Length: 382
Image 1 (cartoon, rainbow, N blue to C red):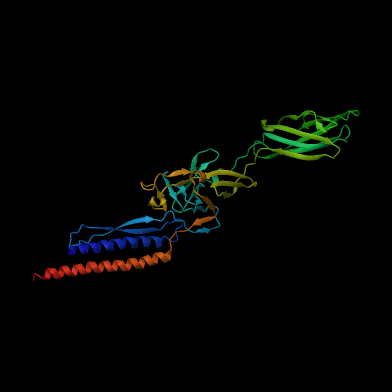
Image 2 (image 1 turned 180 degrees about the vertical axis):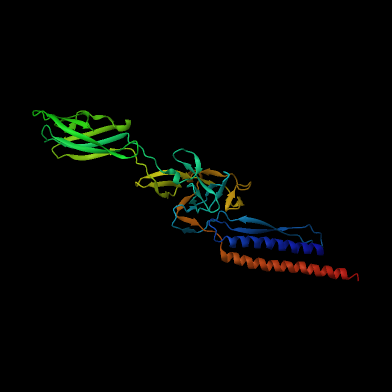
């Protein structure tokens, strides 16, 4: 056995334990980092060929692996844009240069332009459900513009006992071209009645303009023909109005008065579903789906390349990255208002630290013993 070989083996052991202590130090330092995946040092032997009666010491080499597939415990927060994943997927994020990465660090907040960005400066990517484009998810840019009304439905019961000349005035609200609420006036006037058959006619006017005549069958109390048409409103706006009426012995009763269109409104709150759909709740109480969060999955997540900022990139060993929504790539379930803690176990790390320290000391003793033997060998000449 070579004394130099023994000393090199001791150095190899000290280097290996130093690498192990480095991963322990990183794990402890990032024990409070959201989405952090612990690193561990694996040892393997380096064997030097030996002859019968003579043994040549080899050494040890290390490989650092990251427990990326091990999920951390979820910690719930009060922020809707704090996101965690229960499953195997990763959030698809981009840096300022547009480079794609994967991460489990889901502490996102709006920046000065409304884009959701995490603590490391990576933007959360999603599919805009209005345009179909993939982009950084933005909140403030999604304030809703007013949509003028184009269609309306009105339904009511008219009293069969009303005398000729009886009128009833109703109203229908709609959204005008400038996004304000306006009211169109609808007047029903009984203009004729056949005493023998009980048939009756009602003239309908909308905002003072003739709209049509409703003729009723006395035996059924229903219209003999539909009443519909186009109402001309100020500023060139038109609304297609359908009027459904009945005539019975009951009093006048409104059954429906609706028009499409929407007022302009700012986002009040954001809600994120378990499938990664981002909804905006506007000040008027309505919900609109804005984005689908984009995710990524790989065949071997533990082989991903670990980069600064708590992000991961594809490596030759990890397999290709598959991007898409949660269902397309099997990413798992999104939990809004929660963060994934680091999967580091402090007690385990401290135990590894003690073991590494003792192993490092033992290897240093091997080197020290070899050094002393070399000195003894040199002194034999004297």
